[in-house]
Length: 462
Image (tube, rainbow, N blue to C red; front, side):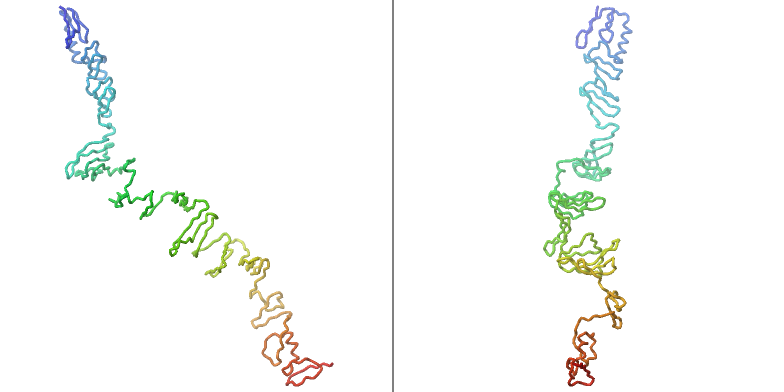
């Protein structure tokens, strides 16, 4: 009598004739009185024990049948179409092939767990690989005098970078880099960590206060403003050779080049002025004039040290220039001897007093007509032996000349005058002989009348 074999749901899968074996399924099914059923039955049991372990899937599988895929070392189940992994996690270095939704895979290389979504493996955790070590957020409980505090710690490469807390407290167990934990985000003090990037609140500074909360936390009101006039009580250092630029058109610049400082007025033909407050009146004692490149000085000028002028000196005022120095030097530093002295400008021409280098004496005169300025040493007492020289007296009051012409007439000298030292002139000598009795007489042919002892007279024949 033939056997009818049914599945669990009652569906007939096959009918086996007596004395035959059926291979409709992965297992051998024996008919009544089949003589070799013992070996086949035992093989069926072995297949069941090992879940048909093989590199290839069983032939003629039934839905729900298990197969151990020796290629991937996975238990797979037949879903009526193909063998799929049973959903157990797989620990290996690469993602399993033919996964089913909900399958877990332990990445043995990076020590991370993934779940298969039906289309791809999604990381479950941890977020860091084994090589990266602890990185990311970790929920921790820290002890404090006020009780345990739950915080979120941020790690990078197994180093705690920051702690996020809802309140301020001091841990009772030392936490490296976190002597005190503030409400909010506290950075590890040993790392020198800072916040980078920009935030909405960081783009503005509150300047309503000038009270610093500590030596390192400065109130916004203590920062110099770029949009308004401001004051600083500290030194202002501009640590760049580009220097300082002032003015709405950048007219004034202070720059440095090779340690040389340049103060520049950059607007064409405009002046650089230095002003002072003189008794409430603003004055400009010094002005650098852009139109002509000149320097204008108003007021007294005191110079300590030497004044060197490479151009000409022009004093337009008629005032007298005075100098405290005992000497005024000219031609200083000149490698060759040249004439030098004093020039007085006149309405026409000029008057000069100068040292004549070619003559080696002082000369003076007006335009084009100069003569030697005589010194005492240039004069002579002996005009007979040194003709052409200016005469001077000897120590005894004498002077000598080859000839002397007197152009004056002079007055008569009284014949009784023995103290008059005037040089006798032609007039005095000529009238000497007419002195007679105190009266002037003309030499004549007649005898004089009167007279005194010692008088003499001349009478000539008619």
